[in-house]
Length: 119
Image 1: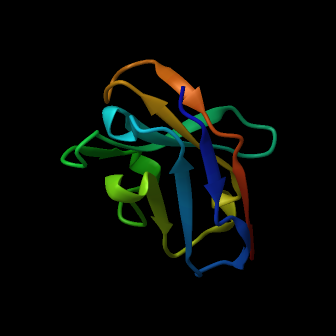
Image 2: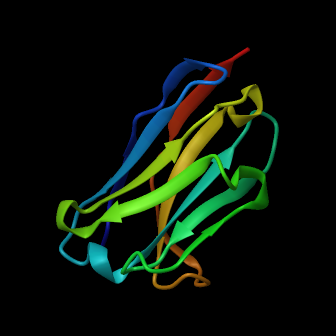
Image 3: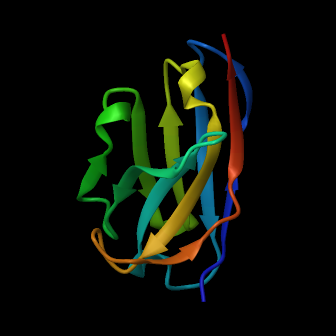
């Protein structure tokens, strides 16, 4: 069992930056690829980024390439999502999710952290 807790959301002006964190409980954190998803008001949840167990493989959604950076620190059981040059359309609840592999089904979800970007 892995529990995921997202932090770092908040209200920020367009053009600003945020770093979201996804902290995991359990000693097997390194066994999971970690994804970030987001869900904007009134929209479907969408994939944002994923990082492999070792951190050696990273994939981003086309819509966030160049502005979002995912990283992980397995010693701290934490995955980060750095978001730069924030846009109002980045407003969403951001969720992290654990899977056994990059293309595997999600096994565990966090409860999300809200990011609101004002114009």
